Amino acid sequence: MKLVATALLALSLHTPAAQAEVKTTDITFTTQDGQKLGGRVFEPAEPAGKRPGLVLLHGSGGGNSWRDLQAEADAFARQGLVVLAPDKRSAGYSTTRRDYYALADDALAAFAVLKKHPSVGRAGLWGISEGGWVAPIAANRSQSVDFLVTVGGPGLSPLRTQSWNAANKLDRAGIKGSLRSSYARTFHRLAADAGLFASAYHDPAPELRRIKQPLLALWGAEDNQVPPAESAERFRANIPAGLTVKFFAGAGHSLHQGSGTLTPGYADAVGSWVREVAAGKVPAAVDEPLPAQPRSVDTPPSAWWESWQLQIGVMVLLLLAYLAYTIRPLGQGSWAARLVAITGSLSLVAFAYTLVSMLMSSTSRGVQAGPLLMGRPLSWLAAQLFAAVAAVAALTCLTQWRAASFRVRLTAVAGLVFIPWGVYWGLLVP
Image (cartoon, rainbow, N blue to C red; front, side, top):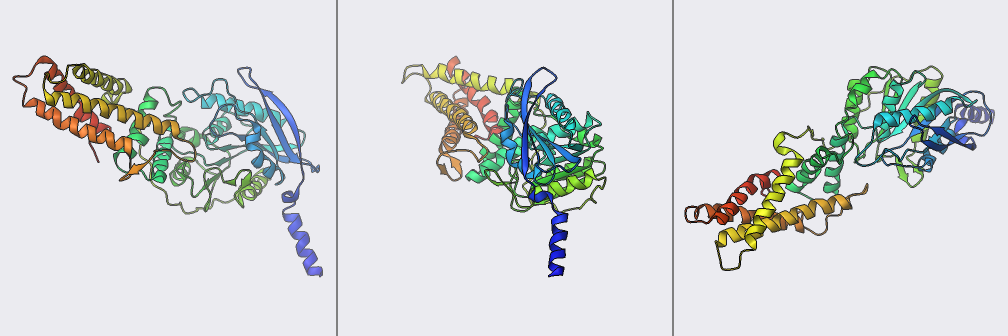
């Protein structure tokens, strides 16, 4: 009995924080540009002198509430930490406009509030997903940040990460063929070049190289939003020292099992690591093997001929040229030119419909592509079929060139321009 009692006592002394009751306090803070944001502090109810502090940084989305981070804040407080879950700005943040450096300043404004808490000793930042880009920037701007924790932190640019994410959604939907690359890479890059994807080419590497604080980097091995293996490779290649990497088998991007339920061992890993670092003991790095993942594809800025202005311009001019010929009364002119005009127009409409509808239906869970045939949405198959007919008909028009009218020649030229454009967008590729 004495041995059992001793063991139980030792266990309780080793993990006292795990059983801690939590109390909360609401706070407000002001950003550098004058926005007033709220938040809530979570801490163990029982006084115990100075405790490690942790400010939580949101993933993507504007105007996120501190409540979105409540599960983590409560779990970390039960690990003996004083945790601030702040609100996230909405002004100045959108799909087309966001500034990671402004978000880092917001994080430091919240951090300053936490540091004034009478129970907080050494303190750091925790960032999930997009917060994994923001936290290193904030840490490099303040000597008061003692450590960092990232969850699903991206080691690649936002555009490359999103392109990989989109490709995974198509894979889960069962989509195959040229649409996978056209949507996930070409279409997303065009949107970025058009200014519809904020901070698309932000490179996290320079900020990672400047980090001097210990950093705990966590990923779910089954993360399909941020490439876990490649991100870990980038972290290891760029962070000078003090990096601890851990993967959770079977876990996804947020390390949640469901609404409000964290992956087993996640809170314990954060709590034990933070307590050690706050006590001045940086844990030895463990070189965990990388999980298997599909490799991402680089998304460099477009060449001049890939520019969104030229791509959209070509599409509009083709459509106008086709429509100009279709208004000719039936029975007049070249049947081949009419076929080019009709099928080319239908291909362009089906092409645009497919890409836009997939983008609009895309959520964190996946993408709605409608019924599939041979791994292709029906609208995409229609676009490809019409494109093939238009290409053959355009080549046929060349045989009528000498005797053709100006309108037939114009339609034939439009059809010939359509061929390389269609190849680029995957309409003439399986």
